[in-house]
Length: 112
Image 1 (cartoon, rainbow, N blue to C red):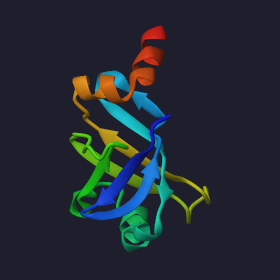
Image 2 (image 1 turned 45 degrees about the vertical axis):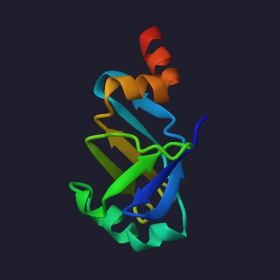
Image 3 (image 1 turned 120 degrees about the horizontal axis):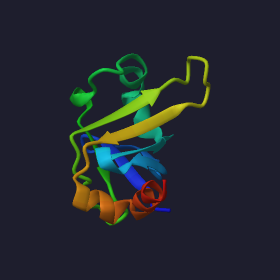
């Protein structure tokens, strides 16, 4: 499974395999694995679940290509009921990119 790099501006903040998705909506999501850089944005990810556009989040493929999207959000619930829960969602990935990056999501959706 591919591993994607997550950035806030130019700073690497984590990784994800984006193991789940909703192909018709262009959504990919999965567990977020933070790096040391995540500490700089962690409070915002814990307290602001509405608009994280100020964090200038981006996702890159293993080849270093930016995944185009309409929005990216990190949901950090580590201080709530789920001590190890940090997830990332990427919304509005264009269909052609989605199909190329997440063929397994598309196959699984088609089989439903």
